[in-house]
Image 1: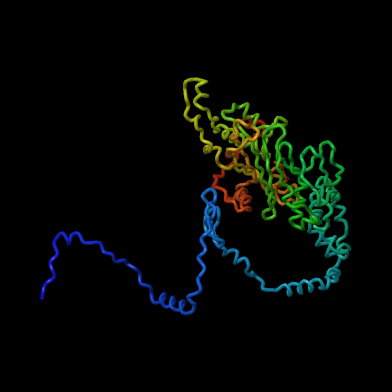
Image 2 (image 1 turned 90 degrees about the horizontal axis):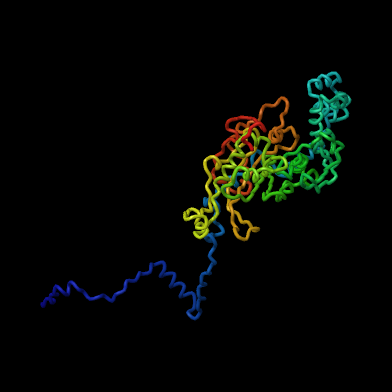
Length: 488
């Protein structure tokens, strides 16, 4: 038997290239499916060609197309948890149907009145019970039924006309608010006046006579309707707060106006300041946000800073501020923010006109300005529910054809106006600097806690505000008013 010839060392080192191709053998399931498909369909029928993928237009800012069932938040990128939504659809405390609730309502309507039970008690006993109540509650008890009026008496109504019982009279009248949709309570007269513009009330400028009802005290010297200041030309009368909150409680169509009717945009006629106001109701309280913006130059002297920030009519800020703006660091913070505005861009040729020195920071100034640790944090007034945020933003000035984009100072204020029941509400009185007899001083950090008004307001649109350090507007707690020279 002949042996195969031995391969040389060179032939073993350099082998010829193989022409075999590696192919993946189909699995048994795939082979069976192909066989069944070929046997069921005739070979003469040709399948349609596959649809080519659509060429989607690229989105701006690097955005990508997401499927419709993608449950992600657009801002944070996190997946939303719908557990709270599903639990909110469940029954809590009751599994009654609408039919059973309607039957219960009909049963209560046909329930026999308790007039006989009230009449069974003696007049002396009812008088003793009424003597333990305030005068306003006695008047409400007498107004309930004729039987109680005969037992308690109408003396409490005459007591309400006395000047020392004025607060009790207002408490009594406020309880009739739901029964009088066509009237509005005047706290100056302690009387319900007829609404002259029912359903068509609109907020107007401070110099426009806008009567919602005819009050005999309007126009008399020394009389001023309760209102709060928004800007030098705009005020928010308390009557509009009443209308909005009445509509929120009892119905917009009959008792008040919608909250969106208060929002405005306007420009100050004597300066470059532009304002935008917006309102929102949260847990029975009316919240207000006012954003004020004005263009500002670099390296302003103190006189130019005062000219930019203060109105020459009454030396108050052009932007919205509470009654305690002189006591704290609101104006020093605004002046500190103005000092961070960089100078405008100057080319090399423009710099050579003033001297041989060239400043590199003026060739390409940074458009994004970062504030310091003093003017960057958000400020909260310790004496009222008001919060402030001072920012520098790059905005477009359409009236300047040479320098279109400039730095603008933006002052935003968030505040809580109260529930709108009375001007003596603790929030309304604190914002306007009013002192109510027998009430402690308002402490915003103790009343509101860690939750900021700005976070509550911006959360209505699903906007997540960046984390801000919240500091006191008056950390030293010094109250000087106009006697302090630092406010100007």
